[in-house]
Image (cartoon, rainbow, N blue to C red):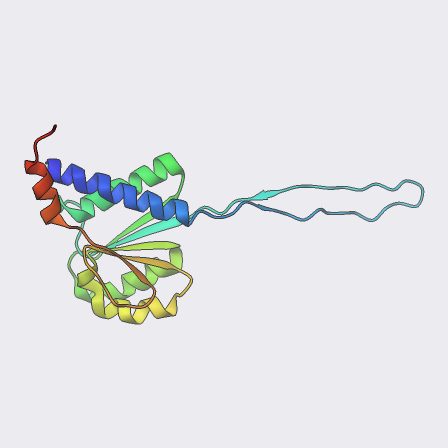
Length: 169
């Protein structure tokens, strides 16, 4: 159970760091000047703050209820939605390889940040999808990839096990 909490905390920390680094800039709209009437010149200026809400998607190789990565990813999405106000979506392939490509394309069309959990399920499909969406951020979870345009998130389980046996000072 502690291992799951560790992975959840680590995943949330990494996800939040990606979200913060991908946060949109606050853009002010230019001043609007209406035409002046003959006798009285009036200048109307409005400053509008335009904020984009980031959409985060998880494409899961299985489904919620796996007591592993997918459940942790789903909990992270729920926290992002409730605490940060982000739009979130999880696409569950239910271990059906025929859905991998379609779900990746759907996620890329709707989201700004796409986590692929676990990434190694989707190697062939990612090679096709990532180049089609160069403006999107794809994160390959639990492994490393050489696919151009992807970020890898690799877990070192052996280090967690080592730390579990360490004694505090």
